Length: 89
Image 1 (cartoon, rainbow, N blue to C red):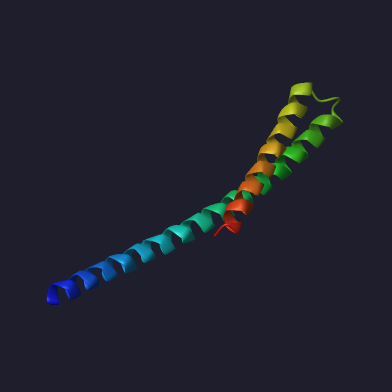
Image 2: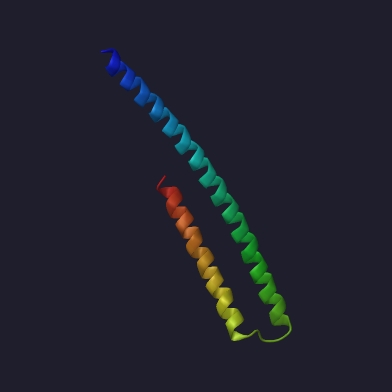
């Protein structure tokens, strides 16, 4: 009986340790997502302002507009991925 109780106690302690590690990891992921969202917003604003300033001097090159919209599409996909991963928690 004592050995069985010892096993149960050790497994319980291991489970608590794993739960603490998972909690810490979840907190890190949430902070990284917040940082990523903030940086994506700043990047999007910067891209928009840069393209507007460039268009004042004349018609921007086709590849600049292509990269501009490609970058926005990537930011939108990233936002959807973060929203989907947050919804599954």
